[in-house]
Image (cartoon, rainbow, N blue to C red):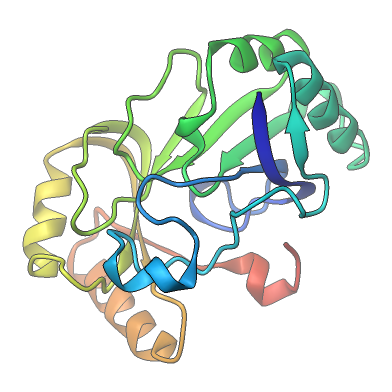
Length: 217
C-alpha cells in the first residue's frame, strides 16, 4: 500500500535538474515531523512549508500495488506530451523513503522512467534510484553520505556554524552541492547569505526555487 498526498506534472524547480519536465509524486508522511502544526515546535524539522498529510491533493490517494501507482504516474506523465525516452519522476514528501521500495522502482523502470528522490538523508536509499538529492536537516542523523546532489537550506536553527558545516559536507561524496535560502519573511537576508557563501566557497552553487518565481507547482 502506497499513500500519496499528490501526483502532478510540473517542471523541476530546484537544484541540478531545474527546468526539467517531471512528474512529482508526493508521499504522505515524514519521520522528522508529523505534519501537524501543534507538533512543529518539538519536531526535528521545524521549517517545512509543505502539506504532506493525508491523500486529498491533486492525484492523491491510496494505491494497493506498485503497478497501480506506476500506471497513475505514467498517465500523469502523458499529460506533459513529452517522449517516453525523457520520462522522469521525482519522489518527495514528507520523506519518500518511508514508502519507496524495490517493487515500485522496478515497475517504473519497466515503463521507462528515471527515478529521482528528494530525501532528508536519514534512511538508507534502495538500489535502483537514478538520482538522489539529499537535503539534510539540523538535529537529524545523516546516514546518506554519498549522493548525486546535496541541497542545504540555510540558515536552520540548531546548525553548527555554517562554514564548519559546509566544510564537513565538502569532504563527503556529493557530486553536486547547492545552497538554498530559507523561504519566509527573512528570504532576502537568507538569499544574500547564500550568495555570499557560494562566492566564498565555489564548490557550492545557488539553488533558487524557480517554480515559485514562475507560478507553477
